[in-house]
Length: 424
Image 1 (cartoon, rainbow, N blue to C red):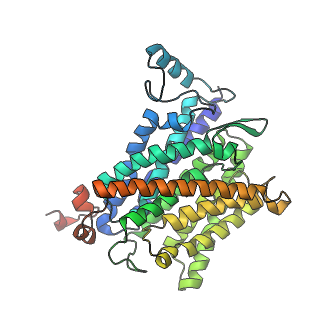
Image 2: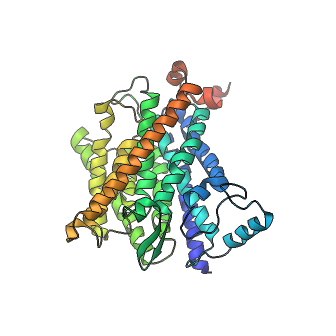
Image 3: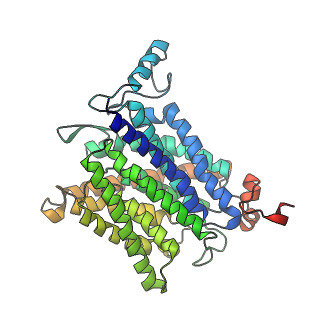
């Protein structure tokens, strides 16, 4: 067992886990002051619920029927041997390196758990200021079970030999899609689900340009910083080894979001005459999203160009909600869906050894498009169906008067900012 690689995987997992609290800060600063607790709790609720589901059965779904890991979930679930001796063998296997790897399989289980958590939490930004916490938790659990865990199987569960995928999920094995760290399984998946929920819950009261301003800009900037920091584990950690490929992913995770920040604020300057701090933070996140699937497949200069293009396109895409009439509160669609698509397709044009720009034809581009489209459609349809059922049964949206007043006190019995006389 290589202790260096084991440490690398475990530290990467911790970095990715930090992204979910970072997301809570990022989202929390952009909503109303009287809804910030509710917004942040959607992320923390996702962390609590999805982590439990992952241990109980999520990993068993995502990494069944192939792949390299030997641990398959809790005894008795999904056909796992209910005999105590069988369980003991699973634990023994989990404490030892998987075939061909230099780390224990539980390190990989832990790393992938953090991906499941952040993916679900990302969706919540589309329904800020108006969602019931209990309804969100029901949606999150069902969506993770029926959508994220299977899609993770399609994208992340594969075995390689001699540099080629020889077994695994159909998006990677059969279509030949390249997605190093989750442009499809994480960002397109979450963005499509966010769009579906935005349609189910409808628009916030007073929905129009300029009506909903961030209540705490520093909080959002802190969240963006934590997301960027954690993203090094997200991208470099996906190599599951501290090697040269991880280093390429690392430099691209510096360059692309930096360029995207510039791309976003340039668009802002031309559109509105001012470059905002929220725009800079959003641009950085857009660049991080776009580079996620491509971080190991691009030379750094092409990573910079991807960031610049993604930042500009996402800055333009966030206005789609006003043009098309859906209320994606915190731009999950404009940043994660659009950014994920751009980064996924970029591989087919500028990817090392596969890109059309380098004479390899458009085969890879079309494969990337098919994979992105498949995840988008599946996630949107399933999220819409799950959200519709939740809305028609227990109700997904809070009462109108509570939404207008701010939902923290009604939903959680707390206020984010209670000073002096406010405490009564």
